[in-house]
Length: 321
Ligand code: F6P
Image (cartoon, rainbow, N blue to C red; front, side):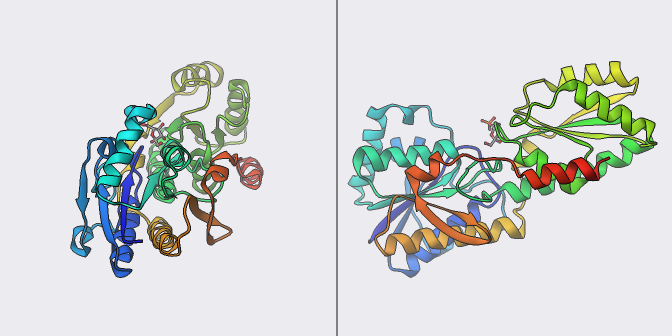
């Protein structure tokens, strides 16, 4: 394998740069020409390739975001545009593509493999931790740490004023950011799309806290939970008589320097991707299971369903009493 390309796609995630650096430097180490595609699948369609050198990825390990840019490409959903993308790859004699992104991005890579038999490798890059085949995705740890920092600060003011706060976090259809942050940040309640906790349950829990002498409650609401934050606040005010505030952390969770955990996951996934290509192994998704870097068939990986960690849910229930 002499020429490979790499792109980042979907929502950016801290650690994407670390993964890119590993791909570029390991590729060059194994005598490959490495091309970066700018703006994800958009750049693949628009022919935006850049030949990378070891220096192109200098000083990026610590930076959040992605230096080669990213996009959510509507155009890539059309087969005629995927054909253009493949022609662009072929014109440059690129033999394989590494895609760093979430569910939709890896599904895009899988289409290139299934429709055109083009060799691809997928790396899990998303803060959401919503890919079922891997314990962790690149960016998740940094995002949870950002939420924890916010919880600590909110806790100071919320306990001083003896009021409750609903903190809305990202995650799309996955409650992992909310659950992991509530568990390690001392939250009282977590509201996630995977569980049908009702607003009545939340009000009951906050009222029990008030009766047992709690100064305040922190409610973590994942953005995919079906009742809106505004409605939740309205009901909580009504049912508890307390002042209740809403903090939406939004894009703060996507930025920032990646943590050690994200850097090492990203680097190891990037190295493994290049090694697989060198060995002639394609169409794999790379991830981490039980603390080890693993790779499995991309199509199968995309089908594996993610479930919330029951032990964390139970621990949170007991610890927050
Ligand atoms: O997938 C990452 C994510 O940050 C989700 O948590 C969130 O729902 C979405 O992206 C927001 O996407 P956009 O950047 O397109 O607004």
